[in-house]
Length: 121
Image 1: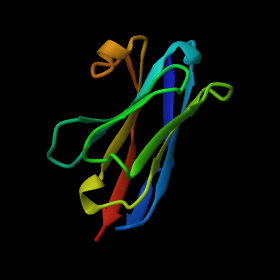
Image 2: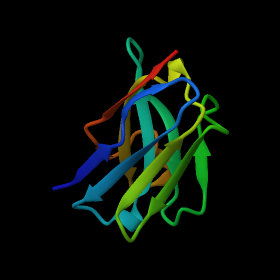
Image 3: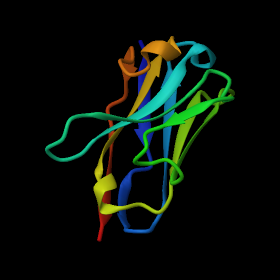
Image 4: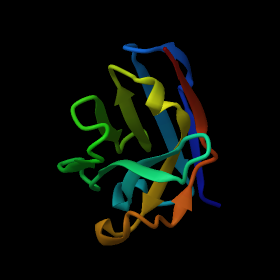
């Protein structure tokens, strides 16, 4: 059974930082492209960031580029999202996702349950 379990969300003031973690089990982690998505209040789920199997390449949405960093530790089956200079518009439920192919990363095979991030102004 595949499980993606996110943690690290919370309430933070604008300009602050948070680091999200996602631990994966039940799948060959090092063979998965990993990503983060988010869904803000009243909005559709949107792509945030993705990282290749080796961690050698990353891709970001324009809205978070330069502020967020995705990374992974294949020995720990964990992917991270470091979020700096947070803005109120970053408020959302953040979801971890796994997919076998980079080309279809925007429609992942597996999803986590989500973790809430709230940024106060």
